[in-house]
Image (cartoon, rainbow, N blue to C red; front, top):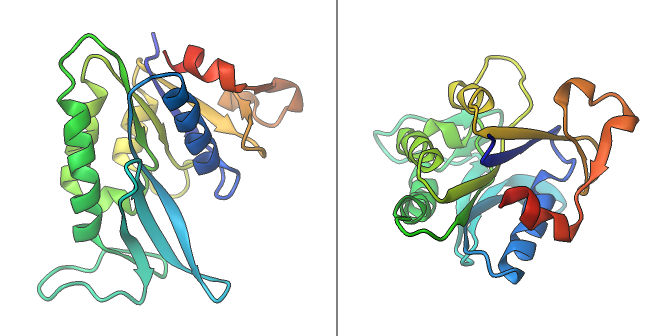
Length: 202
């Protein structure tokens, strides 16, 4: 039976928006929620990178155009963006460790937005995600990219887990295709209302 929920879809269709909305709904329902999401950074109307934002409000760079890696460190690049691994790990790893320490009977939700090429440069992050997937009582609500080019090992691993449900966002932050094989059919769409999020996840 599926325990974790991952959203996927083309860039810009509203995965992060939906993650944030779901997080607000869960919090208002009294469900313990922690985690992080990614947010684009713009300057003069031009996107110059991405930030990591934790649900506690801490923010730091994930990637920037033209960023120089520290001396002696390899450059981790996705297109024009250079990943700031140190910043990413300092923000995200403590959040995941906290989720992994859940030993009580109460269920909690861990937001992971997203598990993509930039984030997967970090081996500690990969290990922490795998551990979080296996922690009893912790439910992951996360996002993963649509398959494109060379498969991402952890993403494919997540897709193939029996305890994971992958939902495809077609075009709207609130319109989801439940079966990825039918995402070309408008008749396959279903809307998750605010009251439905708690039922869907818990």
